Image 1 (tube, one colour):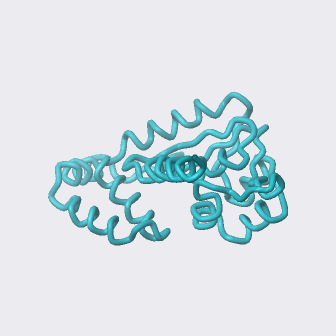
Image 2 (tube, one colour):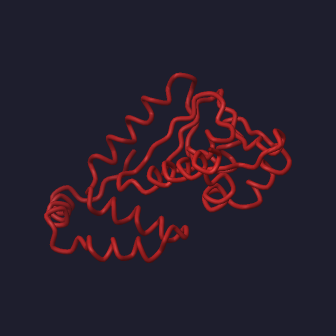
Length: 179
């Protein structure tokens, strides 16, 4: 049972991390153990102000599973994961922001609206270029480089409708600041 549970958990988390679209996670409350492992699959993490983040498994006599020591170390750095996993450190949302465990902190109940704003920004960008950028970033993190680079080669956007539309829009209005 345990072997299947772990294998299936890894497969699900890997599938989420490999989605071609950017994944935005909202951390609302405790994000401990499997919650942090799931959040590590996301490309952007928004924590509500009351969130608590950590990997407490060794205090329970188990080790982090579902990439708790692998993907989290690639995303957040091995020393930070050591502190959470080996010494039980748990961080507030503000501490997590300072440590780059999350990308943004919002008030309690404001996470979904913040995620929807980010999703709207992503939706206004080239789907092809966004997918390719995500593939290359995943390759830089060591996610099956050959698979990612093969997929990238198959999706070269040169001459695509997205490229033509993007260049036309740029010529028309220029590059504007987000502010």
